[in-house]
Structures are given as structure tokens and as C-alpha cells.
Image 1 (cartoon, rainbow, N blue to C red):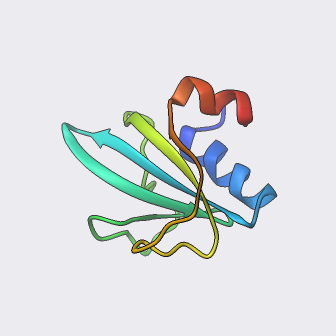
Image 2 (tube, helix red, strand yellow):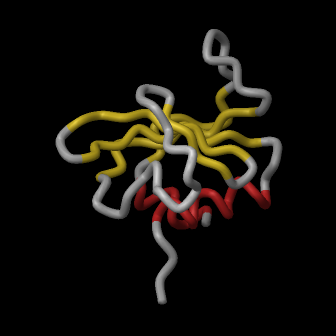
Length: 94
């Protein structure tokens, strides 16, 4: 069985604890920005469910872009490692 997009991205950050992924995605026609750090996902634009079984990034989401940022993440002054990564390019890093 294939891992979900969210699970794959979360596992990436477990292996790289000094990185934060900022994922811009379109979910049901609305844009969302999601931070993924040390295996956990959280929306930066809307409430995140307390239940970890409720995916913040559902499989139906369309990834617009991904930024790799050094942790700790400071939204006022992010330290980018790589910006505007497409989902296709990110898959090669996973």
C-alpha cells in the first residue's frame, strides 16, 4: 500500500529534524499553507484538528509548491534552503 502524501512529507521531516517544510496546497478549491516539522503537520491558515488521524493535508490536495526552511521556523524571517519546489521535484528528495 502506498503512503499518503502527508505521511511521506512527515517522514521526510522525521529524518531531517533541522528542516521545516512549508507546503502550499489547494484543498477543495481553497489555498492552505501547512508547516511540517519532525513528523507533524499543522495548518498555518486554519484550525488544525486535535485528532492526529484527521489529515491536515488530504490525498485530494493539489500541491502548489513546497519550501524547505531551516528550523526553528520564524515566519517573519525564514531561512530558506530551497524555494518553490514542485511536487514532482520533491518526490525525488523523498
